Image 1 (cartoon, rainbow, N blue to C red):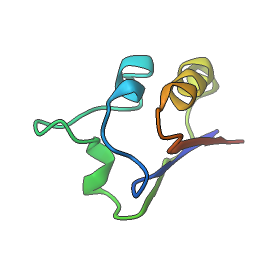
Image 2: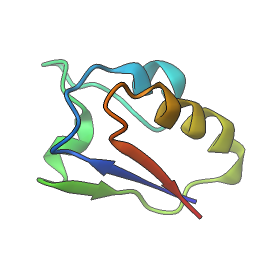
Image 3: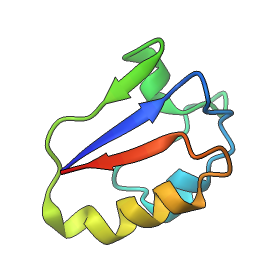
Length: 71
């Protein structure tokens, strides 16, 4: 399973960080920490299946639907 975040849609609301803090985090400026690793789209490495429920909850909680779960 991988997470794909559309950083052009993302507005840093942080709902993902509340739902899946093991995967999503906000930096000291309140921005999604993945922004330092990508400009338009962030694709995670393979994540452990034990995180699936939290990651899917984060994707559903995103007000702009900027998160997709693949695999």
